[in-house]
Image (cartoon, rainbow, N blue to C red; front, side, top):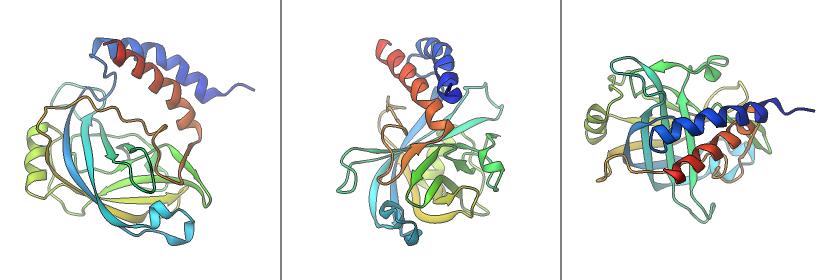
Length: 232
């Protein structure tokens, strides 16, 4: 039986690789800003049997906020929030989360949305297989927070002022979002938009296995982008 998501991913990999070579290795999210951040794990749903979601503690992180399609300003764009956590006792290697701007509701959380405000709702779209069933992740903005234009200057200013933070939450399928951590953005790293390579399929959180159509679609597409970046 044909695996349609993986077949679609292989089909997309060809133009994606060509676009990556044209954009010097970044087919999507070509422009962004990388910031130091702190992940404050507050303890999430303990009954799900996923220690990473239920744990508490603080650890450093790197965050990249970017415009997905590279549309000309001042048009809105599909925004991306990528999070890199260093290896710990729980996870030997790094943990990568890749989130995109979507709606927040039970159905709209799977609908990609063009935004110009970096303080938007971001969702993983890709599901994770766990002992509690399929789980999805999201970054939720603070209610009433002032808008932040999705450009390096405004993002940097808002982060330095402590005005750019998100609540990380998990949901089982279309269920309610359950907070498990606080992500605070601090300030841009010294290098301008360094070449970080995030891979949510190969570097998932402990106890969460990338699964479902989006994971199967992403795997060949990621591989094509990686090869093009190496060639660049």
